[in-house]
Image 1 (tube, one colour):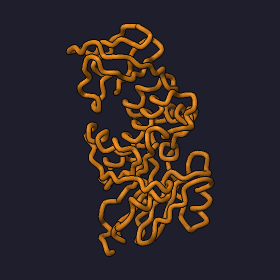
Image 2 (image 1 turned 120 degrees about the vertical axis):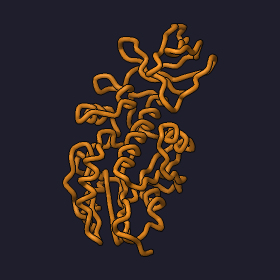
Image 3 (image 1 turned 90 degrees about the horizontal axis):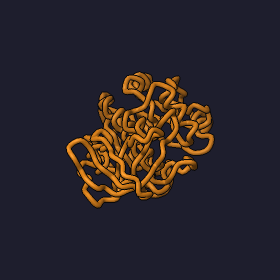
Image 4 (image 1 turned 45 degrees about the vertical axis):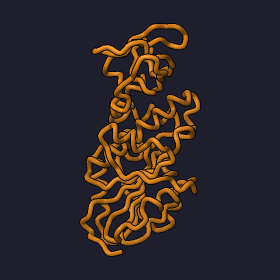
Length: 270
């Protein structure tokens, strides 16, 4: 399919179902683990969107479109074909015009900036080619791009070597773009770098996930939400702890909350 080489890049981001997302964050309770995955997706979509790219999310999580829309983002969201990461990337790249740069990007890049992304995309200006960015360890891949030829994603174990052997050109990239996150240690490393989006930073303290608790909304006031935790403790969350995707908590509603060591409630979600 012919196309204009000046068209905005198409960026494909895969996202797992929340039950299995970030399963290697083994020290983190499942509800908080899922929330961390959502906030990394939010930052990655928001940052790619800021470059003017056409963003496509291939998601196995039915609520992804609504979650992103509640945060002011409206990428195209496609269902995951359920055949693995490479199939998800191919699904998002299908029917792209030949002149358009197609980008396969990991969705867990919490330290990227739009300036970094624009600089890397500028290195992919040739009319025909494939390029990739290895992860911080040098074995995986955080970014694969193609123009004028098939994307041919080879993500998985030792994907950097396989992309290199397939003829893709390795790109130099800043640390934020090479730091995808699968473990608590990698999350701490990302937090120690250029800094994280406030929604994700609220879930961390000293680079590590805060305590996750559950409770019931007792009262909603103009300055926050009063809660009764499952252990019987009464606490109050300030208005800043209520994120855009949870705009109307109501009395009697069960909630998840992220709580810092000093007792401050950092974030609520249903």
